[in-house]
Image (cartoon, rainbow over all chains, first blue to last red):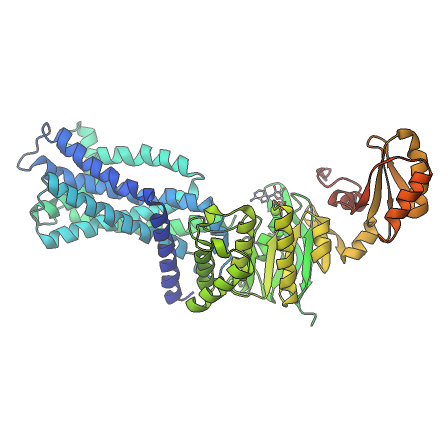
Amino acid sequence: MNAAWWIRDSWEMVVRNLIHIKRTPELLLDVTLSPIMFVLLFSLVFGGSIVIPNVDYTSFLMAGIFVQTIAFAGIYTSVLLANDLQKGMIDRFRSLPMSQSSVLTGRTITDLFRALLAVSIMWVVGLLVGFRPEGGLAASVAAIGLMLLFGFALSWVGVAAGSLVRTPEALQGIIFAVVFPLTFVSSAFVETRRMPEWLGWFADRQPMTLVIDAVRSLTLFGEPGPAAIPAVLWSLGTLVVAFPLGLWLYNRRTTQ
Amino acid sequence: MTRAMIEAVGLHKSFGDTHALAGLDLDATEGTILGVLGPNGAGKTTAVRVLTTLIRPDAGHATVAGIDVTKDPAAVRSRIGVAGQYAALDELLTGSENLEMVGRLYRVPAPVAKQRAAALIERFELGDAANRPVKTYSGGMRRRLDLGAALIAEPPVIFLDEPTTGLDPKGRLSMWDLIAGLARGGTTVLMTTQYLEEADRLADDIAVIDHGRVIARGTADALKRQVGGERLVVTISQESTLDPARRVLESIGEGPARVDDASRAVSVAVESHGAVLTRAIRELDAAGVHVDDIGFRRPTLDEVFLSLTGRPAEEPAEVVA
Ligand SMILES: Nc1ncnc2c1ncn2[C@@H]1O[C@H](COP(=O)(O)OP(=O)(O)O)[C@@H](O)[C@H]1O
Ligand SMILES: [Mg+2]
């Protein structure tokens, strides 16, 4: 299977997914409406009562909401893939002389667009309620790049999960039970040093915190900070493991 | 001329304890329709999935268009079209978008795929719905579009898994026309079905399968000779006239008449329609038999199974140790 065909087939799958979005725009609610609500609710409700030294709370908060949304959007690939797997179209694809992995690359690339859309919307809404990314343009672009890399890696974790778990409903439950606590036990909404010691210890070392801290440092201060390199390594490491694992599990699932 | 386009030898496939295929042999020569006839659970879909490279057999050997399905699945895929038991379409894409996308994925150049999609939409009478999402289609329209997707690359071999199951009589007839047209154009077709009538109408050659292996093989005529062809069936008004009715039918048809007391039905095998019906009515009337219903009936799959295996189609086989 040569690379040119692989790219063409992947693009074919991206176009198919984009048509789906065009025909059922509610597929975008989780990356449009929900992030807007999050930005507004957190900044308005907590803004007055949580005090972070030297930083306006809304500006502090944005990195947390960005990364939380990106994480959900990335892992949500599993639900979209599981939906696809329940329908007959995958059998059609499997009987065609196309690159079989393009179904997955098409899926994860589409979800990268979804993530980018979510970040753009949140960025604008954030600016309206007091987000001041004073780190400058280059640092902001780097922050967005890091978030998309992290989201893309989680999309491949989603591919593995979606191939493994039978139903979209079960996946929704698992996502809620795993990703939700991870986003809260992180530096997303509060400083980790305010947590009970053992919890803070975990929060400081888990990848969400690393990505959030790097994004926060880049957007607010224009410098990568100590978390940036571990954040990139975590993202790449996740991708390197989840990509082949996702391909393998998908293959196993569809050839049964 | 007699090139084998589909050839399967000794295919085995198990799912846990279920032997879906237990030494299945099939073959179809170029330009013919092979009908694979069997009840639910006989292994029809599994056989199609092996031959179309969707699953690997546990044992055995199969080639399609001369290419080994396990050694070079990609090459097989570019030479086959598949319409499965359930339509494999994208619900949110329109009919045209589905066909064009599948065409491009078959490596048909985009403009050619577009042309062919339009022609297939026309030929399959989907013109009005071409630009509507498939989720608005009826069952019959889906089946036709699904067949269209199988044909877009004009492959030499087509697999159809129960192409008319679930269709209304009109949908069934139009599907039959389309399938018959394929073979006339030189395409080799393997189709599965649960209906003897369907296999009889379309297939040049029929393989009856049961529990994952072939239990009878031949042309429709040969098969019908083996199981007894069409029967004349008479339902009478009064039980007391069963005997005279039996005598009349035995004088008209072939062999002994069959009597079903419960439904007051008497039947006999007949060779041809000819004047049989008028003669039967006249002679039954003369014998004082009042008739509620009279007509011809082809043997059902159940009867084929009964005569081939000695048990009805749906009954599970005895467990063999
Ligand atoms: N993926 C599967 N997992 C478990 N059992 C299966 C699977 N596919 C088919 N079977 C079993 O194999 C047998 C043959 O099935 P199938 O090929 O679908 O028959 P048919 O298409 O003739 O109705 C059935 O007993 C069915 O339950
Ligand atoms: Mg079947």
